[in-house]
Length: 289
Image (cartoon, rainbow, N blue to C red; front, side, top):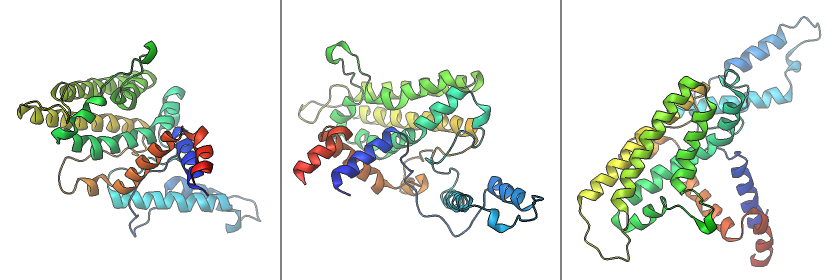
C-alpha cells in the first residue's frame, strides 16, 4: 500500500471513529468475558442431538480471542479497558441509555481519548514552557473567517463534546457532565488568561507567577476531564475511557497508552491535511512518491 493511500485510510477511519486505542501489550493472565462464556454454554446445552463444539462458529472463536485479548490488556493496564472500535450498541449498559446518547458515545469515544492524549503529551509540555505559549494561545483562538465563527480547538475537541453528552444523556447523568464541563471551562479560561498575548518572537517581561497559574489551570482541567471520563465509564458500564494520571515520572506508564503511536498518528494526519485531506492525498501521492 502506498503511503498516500495509508494516509487516506487513516483519516477516514479517524472520522468514522474506528481508530483503535494505543495500548500496551497484555499480561499473561487471561479473563474470558462472561457473555461469551454464557453464549458458548447455551450452544452446548442445546437439545439438538447434533450439537457439539463444532457449533461454535469461526466468528464466535474470533470474538472470543479478541475479547480475551482486550480483557488481558485491561488487567495489565489497570482501571480502564481501551476505547475499542469494536464496541457495539448492545455492550455494557448502552442498551439502557437513550438512543442519542448511545450514538454520541460510539461516535466520540475514540476521538475523546485522542484529545486526552493531546492534553497530556502536548498541552502539558507547552503550558510549562513559556517559549511555547504562542502555540497554547492559538488553541483558544476562534476562527471567524468570513463570519462563519468556527470554534477554537479547545471548544471543538473538549467543551463542545461535553455539551453534546449533556444534551443526550439521562437528566441525572447530564447534570453531572454539565458540572464537569463548567469546571473544565474555568480551568481553560485560567490558562488562556495567563498565556494571552505572549509569543516567542515578542520580547516582553513575563511575571513568573503566570507560569504557576497556567500549570494550575492545566491540573484543574485534568481533574475535570477525568471526572467527565468517569461519568462516561459509569453511564456506559464499559470503563473504556482512560483517565489522565497526575504529573510525575510514571505518568505515561500509568496512563497505559503509547506516546510513540500517538505522535505517529499526529504526524501522518498533518501530512494528509497538507496534501488536501483524504480526497486529495491519493492524487498528491501519485505525484510525490
